[in-house]
Amino acid sequence: MKPVILYTLHALNAMVGCLCIAMLGLATHSITLNDRFEPPESLDVQGTAMGMLMWPGAGGMVDFLLFLCVLVAGERRFRSTRARQIHDHGLLFVGCFITFRPLVVLIYEFVAYNQATKYVPGGNERSTFTTETWACGAGPEAATLCHELRTARWLLVPVLVLASMLTGTVVWVWLHRKEEREKAFGHEDLTRSAEPSVEAKSTV
Image 1 (tube, rainbow, N blue to C red):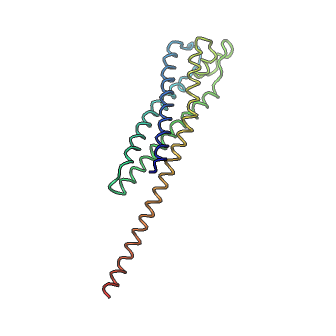
Image 2: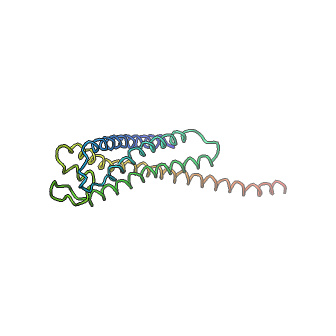
């Protein structure tokens, strides 16, 4: 792998990892704040969206470490083409999962936010809310919870953009190496097919 591509993958992976750490911190603190300022039991507040933010945060950190290990392992020379092929497939799998996780959560978060009702005290208390839509209308005491959940939700956008760039680079590397292997196998087949004709000429 060329040094420029390798450094690019390391940089993208590090940026995604840092954003996931920030998202995890915001989601964890939001859960703590929600325990302090719980909505009234009479309101239908769905906390699934808040809990879902933990998945790209914690999972993103695991993906960051796993991708780093696989990437570093690929810098050494492999004894066989089969080992290199297994490594390339592993790198592709982890790279795709890095994009798949925030994509799923982003779709869910924004759909849940847009479908939920924005809380207005004393006005629409029989509607369904998310923790964010309730906190953003509950008053100053829940303002921090509102801002942190909103920030964590919007952090999914740059995470997905950077993860898509990382996955795109990994796919390009995988296709390039696949083409190189096919050319190498084709060259070996031509060499083997030429050997009998050479032996036949030598016997004549």
